[in-house]
Length: 500
Image (cartoon, rainbow, N blue to C red; front, side, top):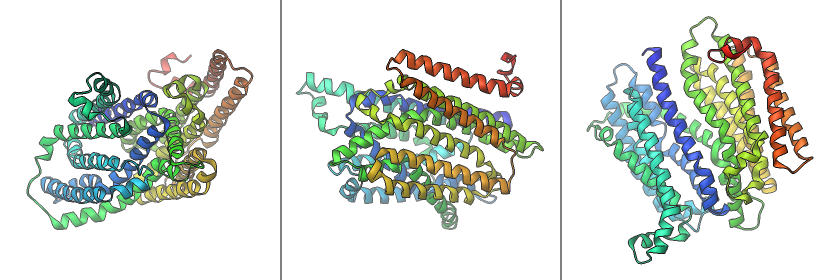
């Protein structure tokens, strides 16, 4: 595959992935306006549990498909059919188990009044699992446009159905109480309509992938299947660890939040989840960066100056996320308007902590090149599991005392630990001359300007002066970077011609 073609495919996959997350992100102001804190908390808990179950339902079979499709002597059609039959069988079995124990699972997730949410979530997970391999085959066959089209259209279907259930259906039920629409509407369903919208979107995705699904042949290779399982099951363990780091804090907050009633616990989850969304602004950039950077890193690996290139990329990456941190925190009075429920604003103090956490995760992704180039993916799994252990221990010890603040700090300490471990370990295996002192300097000055702005804002309650203060400190930081990196900035494409 040519570099140009690889870059083109990467762009399509990146666009679809970023678009999906961004469009879902835009639902935040709508959902926080339509749902109460507790209802939003219920929805957040269900969609925190779904990724865990997705890891179990797929058990690394997608990655195993990619791994064995490039193996000599393996027929791709037989491989695809074997993997597909494995997933179909296990999905039917696991969905049955989930439906059978739906009340127990609902109780475990602190939504025991709505076991039907588990039923609906089970169908979302089942449909998503069945589309895993068809999506993988599109990628294997180099059809990124169809892949991106289906992903983006499905998200629009989901958004459309969410709007229908929360804005159109209640009005139709009220204006036509004898109609079929009125029979569909139940105000007590609350967060359940969000899950039902997910079922419809997942079903739509399945239908669009039906040609790939129907390409499954009546072929089964038992030996190949066992080899795939041996390869994929450790990936499932690592994936489970990653989900603990990413979403499990909301489930634990639903268990142990230091409030009196279960409804209050759900309110705490809702507040934390809504404010967590503001930190995703950096996450979107990191994901876009990964889509483009990972192929670039592997392309550069054979070059003599590869380590210096990686160090240079890291420097500009850190500068960018430091600027993004300031853009969010210095203008928090603007960004908080995305959360339409003002009662949720009490959780805004977690935003800077979570932003630094996601910055640490982004740096970790950059550092991870050492174990990817050395084919030591077990090191990545080990670091992820260490992070998961940190998350579980801190949340277990401190959520009962500090609530969602413990979740935020646990996320930061988890990702910071992974970053430091990867840096120390990686420098011993594949040394990259990162400008560590300079990077720490950029980070320290960023925090200094953030705290200086906080102090300035405490002197006045006028929002206009808050914005003015934030703008001044942002411009000062940009000037600080400019003075240090002027020569480097001049060498950059596009940007360089504007630097004098």
